[in-house]
Amino acid sequence: MAQYCKDHHDFKIGWITAIQTEYVAACALLDDEYDPLPSVSREDNNSYTFGRMGKHDVVIATLPTGRYGLTSAANVAKDMMRSFPSLRFGLLVGIAGGVPGTSHDIRLGDVVVGTPDRASGGVIHYAYGKTVQNRPFERTGSLNAPPSILLTAVQHLAATHERKGHHIQKTIEAMVERWSKLEAYRRPPTETDVLYKPSGKAVQPAVVRREPRNADEDDPKIHYGLIGSADQLMKNALVRDKIAEREGILCFEMEASGLMNDFPCLVIRGICDYADSHKNKTWQPYAAATAASYAKELLQLIPSQVPSQRTNPPEAGNGAFTNFGIVQNQSGQQILWRAGGLWCTCGAVTQPGLRLAALLQTGRETSLSTAFKSLRTKYSAASDIPWQHLLSFSKVYGMQRKTLEHHISG
Image (cartoon, rainbow, N blue to C red; front, side, top):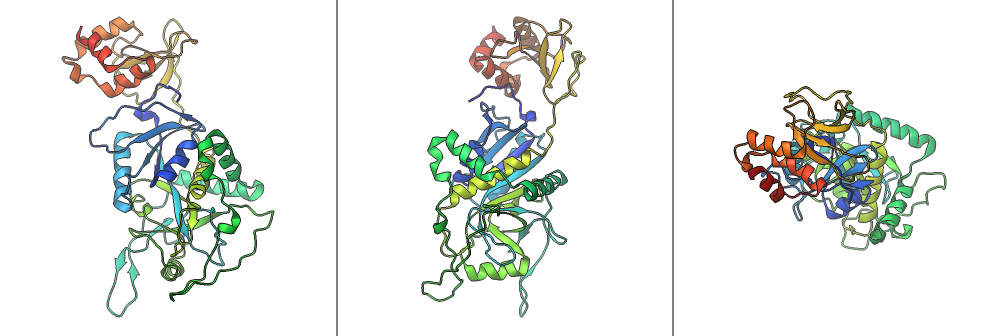
């Protein structure tokens, strides 16, 4: 695990998964994994994994074990936004039950990306509406569309794939080579992708015969359209087809409609079954990996927000800075600064750690001992010190909270 001097404001992308399989796939695709950050809120019940994916710092969370559905997903997103106030957008990445049909040749392992049409934002809460006597069910309301920056990247990526194809399979193979325990995330044999005709009778239904995909076709395929979401697991082919025909849905899942209005995000789903009574878990790991691989490829097209560089240290007492940035002191030494009054210096380039240097009250770098004296002056008790800031530095330097307390109280 790599050690980096990170702060909660550094993370601009929040990635949410619903089950362990999805969480594993997301974490396994990180290019670097960071040390954990201290919690900034007692009300945040999430457990996070931090890392870098391409040029982006990403924070990943998953739903509590055994607690699925819209409310649980909304709670995870709410806690994440509270603890990471600089998030630009989110990604909801995982598995779903696909809708087989003629308009979209959806097969196991394919990816569905929730994109808007003229009437819907990309996700439909298909069970939210009203039932009136002698009338068919009427769905009411609509959910927000993903942020424009994500939809622009989706369009760009779709055009790139049309010309060059995607890298999903290569990404998964590289992931498994890197993490040898994840053999289950490889593509299952094609003969295990079996589609049955919908039947309301208690007999073994007939198998739908489908032609193999052509060698020049992308496999898995990526589909763009509407995703159906509700607090119920879809395992009925007849109901599946009825709702899908009515709403134009490509797949069914259980979390997205709890997020779209309050957590600006894009929903990406790998197809693990056909939302019928023949559900099984054989394709779940691979489907989770295909969705995560698409998400990683998408992030490569989104510009990162790089902290601005300064040639001089910020003015003393200026609390407007919210992120880390590289500055130089009057001696020409590069240092890191952040809001909240704390300096962090790199020291010699060859040194592996970062040193906690001083408060941002003098306008210049001071020694470590001076920093502790300043802390004793500024804070009347150790409990008043913003530990969420100090510990993010001290863990990198190898110091523990007790060591800091000793210096501050000494």
